[in-house]
Length: 195
Ligand SMILES: *[C@@H]1O[C@H](CO)[C@@H](O)[C@H](O)[C@H]1NC(C)=O
Image (cartoon, rainbow, N blue to C red):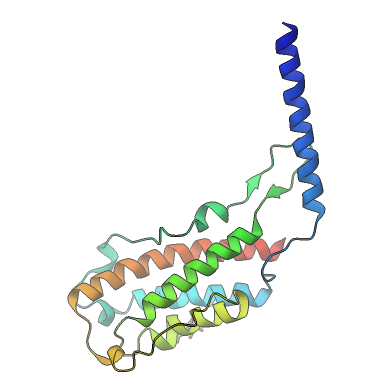
């Protein structure tokens, strides 16, 4: 019996200690890679709007009913899990636990992933370049500095050719996944902006 009591006491003590530590760490300045400003929420909203508009362009997906395709998510990042704030288990603390730095890093990796993908798509009708790619670039340059790939090889003529059926099908699935991820990113940026 005393042994159980001891365990219980030390468990409580440990909880109290870790809560104490957590409180201390919370009072340190947040070291995000860049604060999310109001303009970041606007850039993210524009990107989402432009992706949604692109998905409605039947020319981009000719021969394919894009709305009926499965979406393909980027599984190389953990944005949905790291960008979801967790409620604290510590008594008396209502603030939620949120790792801003890792959320920002994961979003940057997502954006960079989609940027590389989209720059490699044939776009003879310029339905992606001046819309989705441009707003994606603006979001990266202004709010996720450093995520813009510097090693993009110039593919001057490649973008002019017509896309193949498989390229259109793949673009549809990836773009649908990008839309879902961008909704998550919008939510995370709004949350970071409101903190
Ligand atoms: C992208 O979306 C924004 C916000 O809805 C809109 O104002 C803008 O015209 C769109 N860009 C293009 C090129 O469609």
